[in-house]
Image (cartoon, rainbow, N blue to C red; front, side):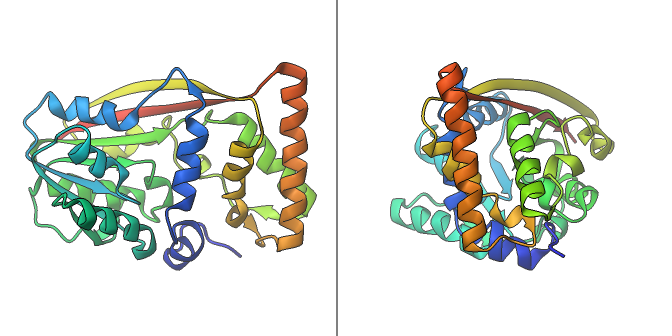
Length: 272
C-alpha cells in the first residue's frame, strides 16, 4: 500500500523534482482575483524586524529567491527540504544568481538548528506531508526567537472541490483505493490545534477562482496526481484517465465558457 507520508515515497514520486510545483503555479495563473502568496508573506514580515528567516519545505526555493531578487530582502535566508531532487533547482539558481541563500536537506520534524535561531519561519503548503505534524510545528516553535513569527499557508477542506470530485471519479474507474487527500489529514479548519504553544495566532482567510478556457494547463496539473492512487496506474491506464478528465473539462468549457474551480486557504500568523 502506498504511504503518502513515507519519506522515500515523497522523495521518489511526489517531490523528485520541481515540475509538479511549476504545474501548480501555472494553473493558478488563471485564478482571480490574483493572490501573490509570497508577497503576502513578505508584507507580514516587513511589518516586523526580521533579520533571519527559514522556509521549511522550501521546494525549489521560489519564495526565498523572490524575497531576494524581487522584494529586496537583505536579511539572512535559509531553506530546507526533505528531497534533494527538488532542492537542485533552488541550489542552482542560488549559485547562478549569487543570492547568498543557505539551502540544505533537512527534516521538519528534527530541524538541525539551535534554539532561538530565527525571527520568522515560513511553511507554505507542506505540513500535510509531514508524518508528525505536531512535532514539526513544535520544532519551528523551538527554533524561533521570542516574539518570532511562524507563518503557515494551509488549504481549506473546501479547496478545489472539483479536483477532489475528479480524483474520486478516477479512483472509482480505476478500481483503486486513492491515497487520502492531504486536506483530509490537515486543513485550515483543523490547524489551530497544533498552534497551542504560541502566544497569539491570527488567521487570514483567502479565496479565489481558477477560470480556464482551454484544458491543457489543468490536464498538466492533474497529471501530477498520478502517485496519489493506490496502486499507481500504469501508462495505459493513466493515458485513459487523462483523456477522460480532458473530456470533462472540455464539456464544461463548451457549456459554460470556462472550467472553474475554487481555491480556499488560510495564512496563519503565530507569534512565539
